[in-house]
Amino acid sequence: MLSEADPARTDALMARGRSYGESRMVCNVHWQSDVLASRIVAAATVAKLQDNPQFRADLEGARKEIAAARAQGLTPAKDCAVEAKTLQVRPASAL
Image (cartoon, rainbow, N blue to C red; front, side, top):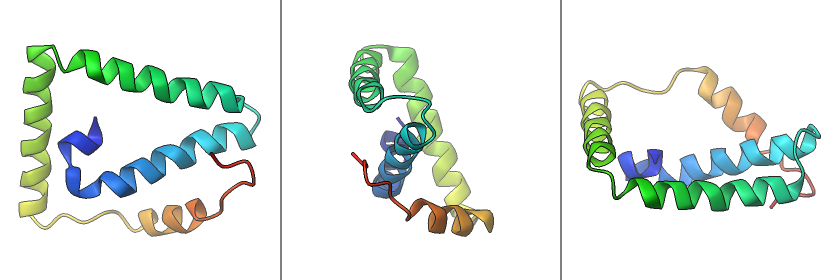
């Protein structure tokens, strides 16, 4: 949903989501099959939400909020750079 609200950041958002799923496997919180299944469930849920007028209105509101933040010149917090560096470490079992 975030990539629909901010298409310019799709690659970064998808990479962050993948890294989060991988971290769940590394920490033995979930199995690889859990992470893969969650992607399928998430895609199906978002597809269903597209039929909901309130969801579409909320998504449009989010797009406007993001555009307003960009217009103000807001930038990511400094700790985003630290997180990005950490996320470059990929587990051997990365999907």
